[in-house]
Image (cartoon, rainbow, N blue to C red; front, side, top):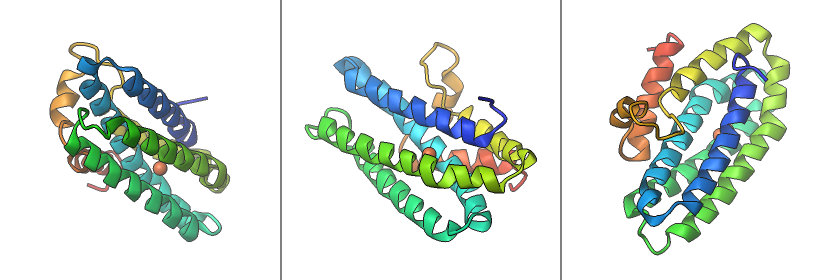
Length: 183
Ligand SMILES: [Fe+2]
Ligand SMILES: [Fe+2]
């Protein structure tokens, strides 16, 4: 596994997202909001990176890419809507735990579909150079979403990436476009 391969990076992020769901589920009441905010950030940054970098490539270069990507985008939009509603309602909402379980199931199924149908074909279509170039953009976005709440490390990204998912996605999109020269 290497950080220079966009598929490796995204699969690793899938694992981080799954373990962050577990952290939110297991968090003490006083830690739940912060744990959920980290999940929001991870998901927002991950899906934005896929939407900006990986899905467009798959659409152009992979057989049946259009259909494949349309399905993944529909799932990402549904998850985004749910995340937005949950962020608005807050972790004290009586439905929070049930919504979190529903979201987790949908996100895991979505990630599995990417790993099964999209990523292998992407890897086949793209050369090493392209996989590395795509990884650069994903890594630039990933720097905005540290997974662990170490003092100091999280301060700057927290300021940049507080608030609702849509705001985080806008910020991630800017960073990715700059990193990939499309600003
Ligand atoms: Fe995705
Ligand atoms: Fe993904």
